[in-house]
Image: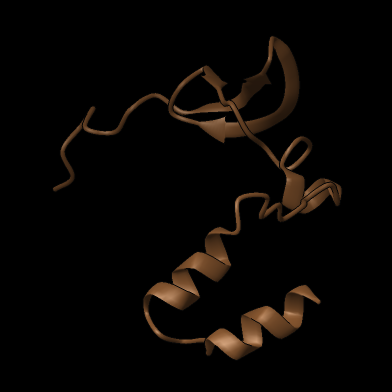
Length: 78
């Protein structure tokens, strides 16, 4: 026999907020959810993703662990 009242209340019209704006409506066990990132402002989905290596971190990592010859790095800089 199933136990009564073991499941949480279901909210089929739960609002998802990001930066104070409703961004979508979903089903949830909470009536309201607040998120920092969603597909509407995430760089991967908006196409604004940029990989910036201003400090040469990748090159420094490769040199540190011997994955790149020193001759390669000097040729790349020319």
